[in-house]
Length: 159
Image 1 (cartoon, helix red, strand yellow):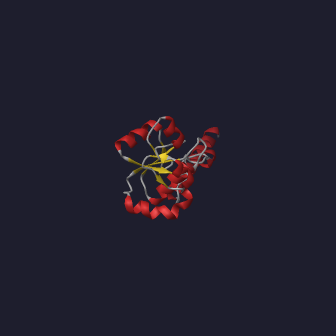
Image 2 (cartoon, one colour):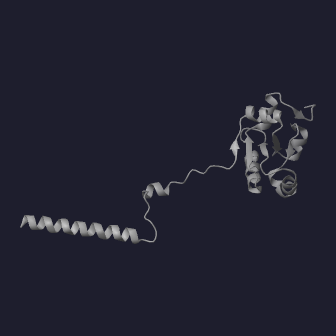
Image 3 (cartoon, helix red, strand yellow):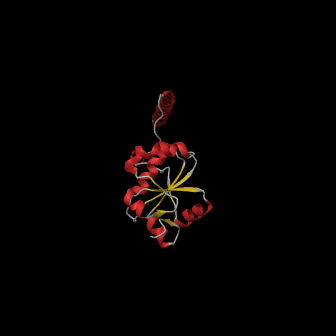
């Protein structure tokens, strides 16, 4: 009697296993292999633009391989900026976007900067440049402050 119960139990188990495998194979959408907790975790989003160190920015400046974009308001830009930098305030996007697209290739290296370690304008500008299609965009935290502290070329020269 015990032997018969074991055999019937094993038969039911294997039939259930076959039915489960068959229904899984015929399912239109695969079942997730991650736990519910893993699925709820937000994926790490990699930004299409990257932070750059002052040393790398200086090297690209000296080689002439980068366009520097000042994200500060025009009055701050006019008081002093990185030599050759363009003033591209994020809020004036419509004013400069077409000019930039008409005059620079999308693979041009662009380094955005603003002033102060908590200034987010360079980050915002970098994001907008990527929206336009530029592929090599970097932002320099406290770019203006670091640039001056390292004694690098600025305009106007009397500052």
